[in-house]
Image (cartoon, rainbow over all chains, first blue to last red; front, side):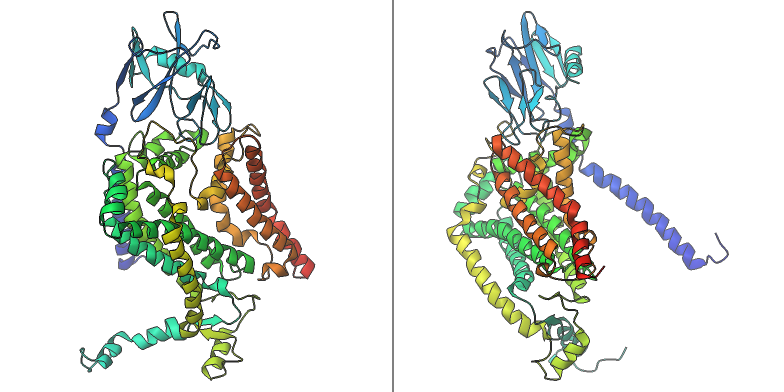
Length: 167
Length: 416
């Protein structure tokens, strides 16, 4: 401190220090009050039995996981084979989060691709973007496989392989 | 302090304590407005009135609205629309005013641009006004979520997703804003808080700041004449009203404002009673459903132009993803009007018709914004996508050329 520092400067700086600490602590509290609640974070697991849902090849079904739609597509024989397919027996599946990677609308299945109504993005049966603004393929949810049962929310080697193939 | 001896319970005593006459003089009868103005200068009072209508109708809606995903839709579409006496009227007044307020804001804004009312001492008016525009946009967006219909839900989903920043994939930020993995109850209640408390509070404060910033430089006039307000006010007060270039805010200026306001209110209530549907999208009368996106979604008309810049670039360019480019242009579109005073390199304050190149620039901008708005509503397929692309390109080009065009006008006039 310089020799010119007087008692009022000291009072001012003391208050600035108290206010800075208090302000920073309040910001942390306010930030965390906006975080997703623990109950929301905890409720995150959904199971799908691929053998029990009467999937028709080439016609995807939609399930819900963490409030988001999950596309489950059994590929037809004509559809291109892809490294990122989930292979169970002789069947090949595409599993993805059904939200356009552009801004999160749900693309609708039109004959042989997903089309997004919001900004015109399109995805092929592998979930790869083929037209419009989507910057990358449909996201893959973390899941594990036990026989024909998928557990969404629990990361397994199959979902990791799918993510790698699309990265 | 000079002690006041007059009774508190007398008019004279109150006047001594509050000095209301002086206040009235400073704010009203000796706040000077130039004579050389037209009806476009009435938009400020029209806006203040529309904001008051929004607050009053909002208070009545607030008494029956329930910010809960299970109750919100019915509280609006059943309780307010059918049970509450005149509930339908307050809802339509609120919805139509929210739409019309943007029409007036745009007129107000482009009046400022046309007459050069944003520079040479008026920068703070422009900046506070643009902050008001941004806050009104946030207010409109948060309010649109409240009826919890399909458009409410999907507008919320798409707009909150913007904060992921495209390829930046800041999904943690999106989930923080939403308070969940998807738009849900936590999202609705926090945006309800923003809509009915925090944002209106900020708007009211900004309006006060906006008025304050206007006080020192005064409003511009049709020929951008630099008026000596002290000298002109003296003329007026001396009784030389004919020669004075100014009039007092009250009662002279406001009387004309109220005439314009009367016409506006007739137009507004005509819309409220006979044409409210334009502010009530039919899709929003389906309850929110996280599992079905409506076939075609679009924002309200006043956001269409910036929405179209978001999706204008629909293919990858310059090694960047189409979506990222769109997001960058969208971000630019939100902020670029804010720096208008600093992009205009012309040292003179003049109306656009006295700045030949800027005049053309101005009308191309208006046409381009109209084109963007029209195509923002159409599905982004085929030729539509290309019109959107080129209109977005023109939008960018206009801003890039603004400093040069304004400079060139100034050179031709000999001002530079």
